[in-house]
Amino acid sequence: MPKKGSYAKGLAKREEILTTALEVFAERGYRRASLREIAEAVGLSQAGLLHHFSSKEELFAEVLRKRDEADMSSVVDQTDAFQGLVDAMRHNAEVPGLVHLYATISAEASDEGHPGHDYFVERYRFFIDQLARYIVTEQEAGAIDPAIDAHEVARLTIAVADGMQVQWMLDGTADMAGALEYFWSLINRLHTATAD
Image 1 (cartoon, one colour):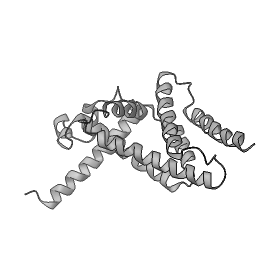
Image 2 (cartoon, one colour; image 1 turned 45 degrees about the vertical axis):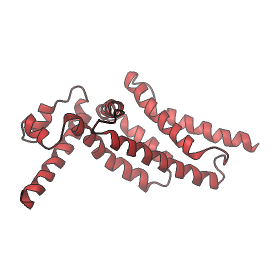
Image 3 (cartoon, helix red, strand yellow; image 1 turned 135 degrees about the horizontal axis):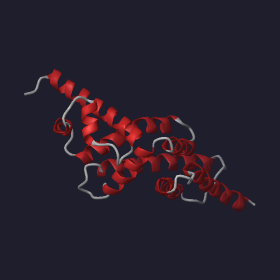
Image 4 (cartoon, one colour; image 1 turned 180 degrees about the vertical axis):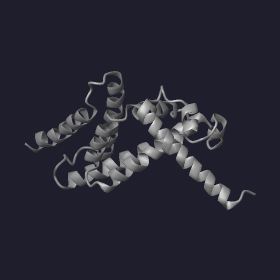
């Protein structure tokens, strides 16, 4: 039976690996970052690095989970969930390697056997629910048409955000946050048109 101290050390090393991998992906990008580079940065071999994760795919999914810890707390703490999403999109423009990692791993995680599958299912559920609650609040305040389905608009908002990330990766001039704000202006305009 492993000692408590070795378990704590293992958790600390895992956390160090995730923090370092997050920095490496942000600086070097998904394609240019290597497991060897991450392993060396934390004083391990590649085999030693993967000892802390079941696979490379699990490591990548856990890196994204670590990144989301900060992003999710900022959305939860913000009264305007939509603005929190726009702010996250602006931040994403500063970390292209992480955006590429997210797009790649989220697509791979559509396979139910992928180590990140449950995480991404829960992630989408969380953000859609947060936005839907915000939309209902805006409907109750008279700012958004009460006839629209808050959950479906939330789902479409996330789809626009994800789609714009892919467009931005293909064409760096695409304005992710600007497109999201424009989409939201259409939702607000719909309310203005029905109110007239």
